[in-house]
Length: 191
Image (cartoon, rainbow, N blue to C red; front, side, top):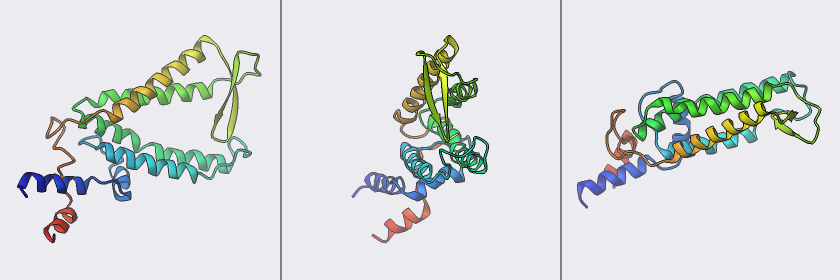
């Protein structure tokens, strides 16, 4: 076996889908520099979905009751690390972190939509479920624009998260697929 294929095997071993990789996003929750792999994004997304299933809010709880507030805090704890991870994912594609504004715009448009006064709904209204609350939103030019901006921004965020990386080193650092943790190197040395 040549040295190149051995390095490739080490890189694959260090970047396999695991809970350790998913929790790496939490350990780097305030780190906007460096690079993150698609595997890290998928691992954290799967862990986030599992956490959302475990969310302790109830549909019948009052809007600012203790269970609803606990659910909001739980959601914020799980939502925050995805922003720095998205910036690092953009860096992995050799893009500026400012592209992460698509994520912020999506969040702000949806939050604004939820905070608008609720209507009591003619035909041009819709019921939106947000956590433990249901709201009737009347379709106006403002709400239609907010929905459109939110959906386009969310789609842009998803596409940017899963575009291919820049192979090798780039201006934001070395290729994270080739950075091998010590335990991966030690385990292959014994093979």
